[in-house]
Length: 107
Image 1 (cartoon, rainbow, N blue to C red):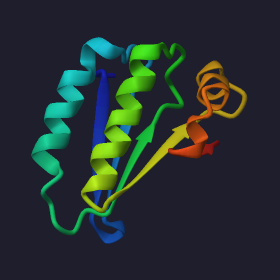
Image 2: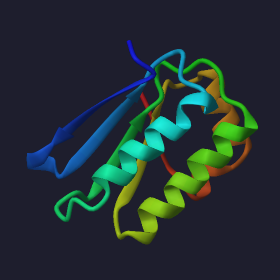
Image 3: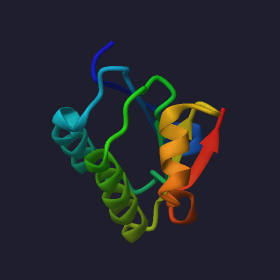
Image 4: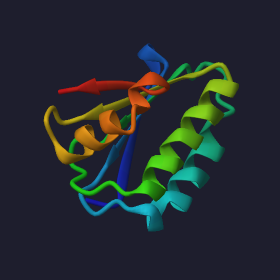
């Protein structure tokens, strides 16, 4: 799997991005470029980042997720983060209290 894969679900006005297990802050620029190219789609309402394959999360990625949330929200779009229930990334997100500003869903 590449560092991330994307799928636009037109009927749900949703862009889903699945981060691969090797995704790290080194690939964030690639994801930002993708977002920049897609964010102007007027019918796009929801961005879902699926982190269920991610096993490592550091402070840089936390900051990048917060920034991504801010940009998406400023455009009137919704941001949702999917994590594996009980995983280390989920624990870190909740410990950092990011669930207060980011819509986190556990699966």
